[in-house]
Image 1 (cartoon, rainbow, N blue to C red):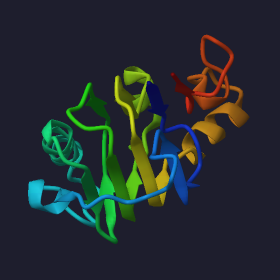
Image 2: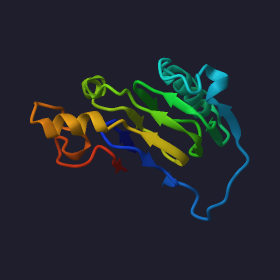
Image 3: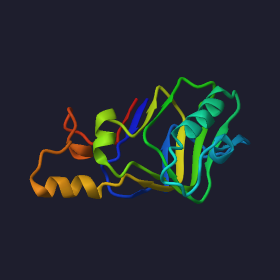
Image 4: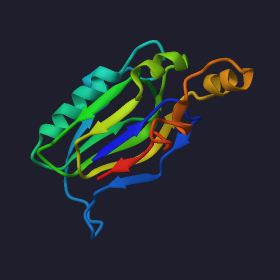
Length: 166
């Protein structure tokens, strides 16, 4: 599975995005990894919490039990993050009560091509929260007629960067 979020969209709210949950919708007991416990700094737009999120992911992914990565109610700045698999379990939930915030300078995200990337994982659920891609700067650039990155509306395949391939 390949799932990617780029930072060129305006604020996006997730209710539930499920990529491989149990067909019966059941919820198993799971371990919880709070991103703040791994060093994420709530409501600090100058501190990059990407390493804390990736550290929480590493622990959840290496667990043989179902795991939840918890994002408390606050804003967390993430420059760019890649969450790699395969994982030892197929039941990882990213439970968000808070907001993930992309760099306000869209050129920074354009250089890495992906803002948040899930690669080679199955059974990931993203629930709740807000994804703030800070798209207003890119849209202002496009409206000015300047040369700007493509953004999520037009990648090499002519598809949105927010997609899921099995």
